[in-house]
Image 1 (spheres, rainbow, N blue to C red):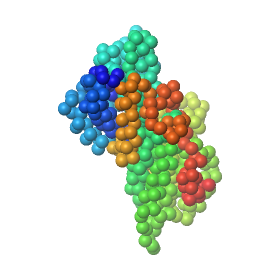
Image 2: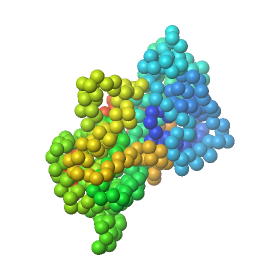
Image 3: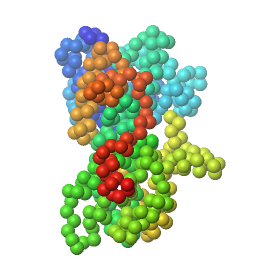
Length: 408
């Protein structure tokens, strides 16, 4: 693609994460710089609105050249500057039901025709593993069915940090720090009532990374505070007393006995719980009762609707003798933030390498490849990219954290 005119498209998809705006900003900058450096002869930048919905419906807009340099302002903005949606191209029934394609059409064909119509050479898919593997399928479909080539360069967005074989996904570090900030205020509610139980529910379907990282960030913040005696607000009352994540077995009765002793001592409890904790047990119970389990377009259980935090808060409250229980979810607060400096730098490196990869005609999902020596940033082959990577509970910092709060 070097030395040619390039039509570049971008789209963001799936849930929000603190990286979408920065990804668009960095990609726009490096494509612009490639044109100025003479690596390509011409450039057109198109944004598809609302993820795959925009691709299917042809809803897009062009970013004019005079706006390219101004895109840097997006670094200070959370959310997506072009809109997101949850659409799966291979879920034909869902796409038809939502009016994205006709009864006799397939989403893949409709999307392919749109990219061909718009003469797209490169598409950057900024999303999680589902978003990027769907883009790979679309690229393969266009090549096989239409003899065309669209280079797909993905940007790995997810605050769960659960994508193989990527060391660190975009937005996860920011979300952990924002979740810690959220709870730094919420924890003060422990002073509003005797024997208060607070459950801080963090996002994370199958991975406890965000819950663990948020807990670490929060405890680091608490350590920077001074709590003078003889006042009842202390580092112990503000500390975390339990961390529950899917990767750790949970014996609720045993935990209840341990935590009741802490409740009796400090007069309050703070529990960090991953929203994916206990989901299998809750779903099994719902199905046994003949209840419908709510799922999204990707077939994932709709965690917000089955509410694990509320489920466990009721059980734990009785075990520890809580007078009042409060469940607070930091997910929407954390995921809506603008990227922090760590994520901005990670995204910058991946965007720079991603534009170079696209010009070379190489598709893949950008990221630090854990399977390669030195974890280099490269376009990772889509067939190797998949979600569901669990958090490694053997991490020394996490084991130290569990020991410090008395959970192990």
